[in-house]
Length: 453
Image 1: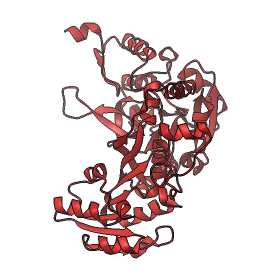
Image 2: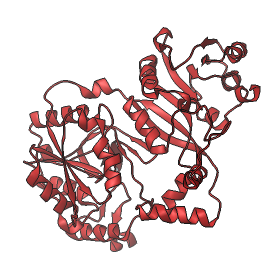
Image 3: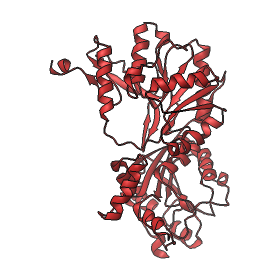
Image 4: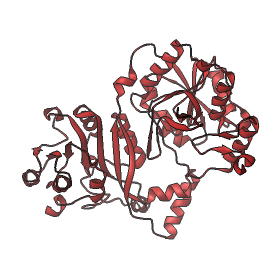
């Protein structure tokens, strides 16, 4: 038992911000993590919470304060708050109601606070192997530790944090790579039958523990006040499981009673949008990928922001959630704009009311929009084309807008671009011969002659 409480998670230690001033560690064990961090950064104040009386007594010799209680039962409001960093090492999987805990931590944290967390990945190949064998007997430690009461994959962990008001990313991980066995190869083949590329499957199957860092999202500020616009969500679907795990169960859409219109068998984004708008009841039409998850608060924020655009008479341009805008530094330079958690990476930048390019994972158009989706572009770059259409109109009020509402793009696609993207890129360049270059989040599109100049 002493070995259990004496561990030091090096990757977790490395993920803690060096400028942390006031830290709360949940499950501090014997206090080794806090002790080591305080040695490296003497000015920090470190509080620990521990259930074991013996471990808490030991930790108190190294930390500034240690509180002993059971996180499943205790009221965290008894702590003073004002923490800029909260450390949760190998603990959340032991908690029966992690949502309640994370919501309580939100209230204890400063506006710019971070959570630094380590979680086991239950989609590691070693667990899948046992499931296929029909025996998921628990162990004394490891992924199937007998004291675990919650199970996480990267996607489910991200949804848990997002729904409690935290914006996650996964900067590091402990990996135990899948063995090169016939069984492993067949499991990868099974993943590919679901539409999950080999590269993505191997990345998931080899992840043993996740190091997750979260930033606090000011939900109250984004919800705001004023008119809230009703929304119809149009979703092209070709993988029902992906739709059901993301769009269909999104609490952000449920909290505003968003209408969801699914479209199957569409040949292009334009075809899906045309079919969807024929069924949509509301003026705002949001076409979204089936793998997008709208967390708690995002629907309220989105409805308020679209309502504000409508009240300002800005209904003719497209609205996106991540993309590019002019940097303002001259010379045609661009900057990132918007907010999305893309797979395991947090993309967080201020929005824009004059976007140059927006990503297609989610785009809103009002029924009065002066732009239209080009069927010739298929499934790629059509949203960037909407931005170019808006700019060609010449009216700044009709320009593309990028919001700051955090959505989770829970994509399983590989990082390489498909050939269809290259075909759409060429069609977009052909459509705008006066443009030598077109910036996008996937890279700058250039004509061959411009590239050689």
